Length: 191
Image 1: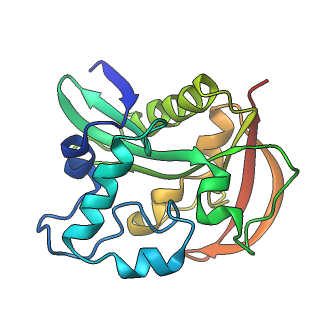
Image 2: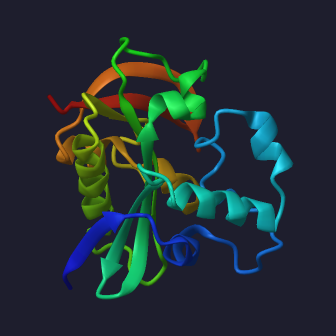
């Protein structure tokens, strides 16, 4: 299997990985953290969520990266400048310094493709996208699960071990807990 990671600028491929089966469903569509305004996030219902993601896919930088196995999209990682996300004002995830860092907050691999190392490819691709757009550093906010199993619905933030394998180091504790595990702020300097 040769996995290729590309910028997420094809909406249909993004929707194949993180979109709802029924367009009228209200699923995250990875907008919960991407949008700075919780008011906008709550106002977007059903198809309007997909339309907003389609708009983001046409922007530069795009809303994330996609992993492909051949032509099939098999994974997604949301990555963007922290200033353009709700992490800019999040009280539970601290700011380490004043750098214009990028954040990676969601890593999702489609069923049938898990446990093949695709999340590692996605994280590497997120780092590459941030670096290519001049980011001085990139952060993630994974759970520190100390090797314990993480509920699949909450595994989207990644694990500390995943980030450590990609060269990230712990920069701070957070006040955020997910699925019973504390989240830590992991940072990779890109300069």
